[in-house]
Length: 274
Image (cartoon, rainbow, N blue to C red; front, top):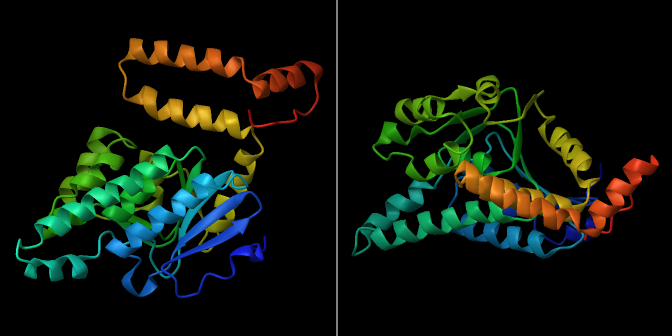
C-alpha cells in the first residue's frame, strides 16, 4: 500500500516520520544511528505526533514502527550521562525525562484509537515499554526484547509498569531480574506480542491487522479501549458495575442500534461513529 503524499513535506531526516495508509497513521522512529533511543527530543516529538493523531478525525488506528536495524534501544544513555555535569548532577533532567516519557506512554494507552507496534530488531528497556504500552504488537522473527537495566545498575522501574501489565508476574520478574534478551517467539508465548512475522513483513502485518480493526465502529472501539484499561485497575465487583454501565450507554448509541439491526436483518452495518 502506497503512503499518501499529504505528509511528504516532513523531511526525511526528521526523528519521527509519518505515513498515512488510508485511515491508518504510521509513526516511524527515525534515529537509526542511535538505535532509535529515546532522547528528550524524541520523546517530545513522539508525544506531539500522537496528539496530532488523536485530533485527526480521518485516522482510525495508529501503528508505531521504526527505521534501521533496531526498534528502540530505550533511553538515550549518552544524553543522560552528559547531564551528570549539571549542578544537581542531572536530577532535574532525569526526573523530567522519566516523567515526560511516562506521559507519552500513557498517551498511547489513552488514545481513543487502537495502537499497534510493528517491531523490527531489538526493543530494550523503554523500547520494550513502548511495545508493551501499545494495544497490540507484531514483531518479525529476529526481534528481541529485554529490560536490561539491572545489568548497568539502573533497574527498569518505569518499563516495569507497562511490562507487568502485559505479562504474568513471574515472566515479568524474570526479564527484570536477569536483563536477558528474549526471542520474538518467547515474547509471543508470554503475551508481550500478538504475532511473529517473517523479516520485513512486520509493517505489512500491522497494516493488515489495523485494516481489520478500522472496519468497526470508531465509537465502539473508543468506548471499548477506554473501558478495557479502566476496568483492569478495579476490583472484580467494581469492574462489573462499571462495565455494566458502559454497556448500557453503549447499547443506546446509534452504532449499536445500527449494528444489531444489521445483524438481525443479515446485512452489512453502516457506521456513523456515534
